[in-house]
Image (tube, one colour):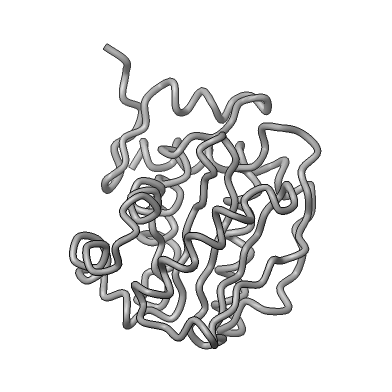
Length: 206
């Protein structure tokens, strides 16, 4: 049986999950991404302003499509209508991650894709579902494709997603908006896996 490295909130990280962080050539899986979302929600941004939706929930919303069912099963108990910002990890079912953020103050969705337009169709379809779930006007809400730093390999999309989450949350905390956000540096992306390993080590020792 594979060894559990960390049990945190609803996340359970095994040796094989943590091993992904020790090599740049590995694609980050949904367990790592959801763990980091839970870490941010419980350790860094302890408020009701930002809602972090994990990978499984986001994928289930994408598959179900029915807003009544989605709200009943997933969103109502999360007080989704009281949240100012919602963060979604999008996946195209072909191993590419991108980040979608809903900003209620700006009445807009923002999409960060580190391989330009790779998740364009996935994003647009998902935004249509969320517009219905959040009971928004489809004629007023827009989705902006952010011109962000691009990856130059095939395995770093998860790193970019998590770094963009950090950037977005800092912007929200400072300015209560996402627009006019700064761009990532490649150094930040390159250091993200070691940062995650350090977080996991810290949590296992507490």
